[in-house]
Image (cartoon, rainbow, N blue to C red; front, side, top):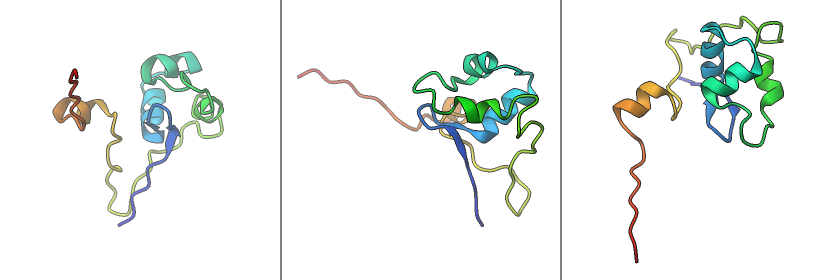
Length: 96
């Protein structure tokens, strides 16, 4: 089984699936994507690619990527459902 997960924003670990979901939920501008996901809020290299998923863009209306079995690809590390159910990293701060 091959699972393909394309990241649009490497700085914030935002996947193509998350951008598609935000657009499907009503995001129509880069400001919408920035506010909902944080796309293009760090280095900005992903802005052009993310904009292609907005209405009128090259990937507008593209279906969510699925693998052979027809189920959605695995959650990204920052998907809200995954983060709320089981944090992947525990941060411990110690003073010397």
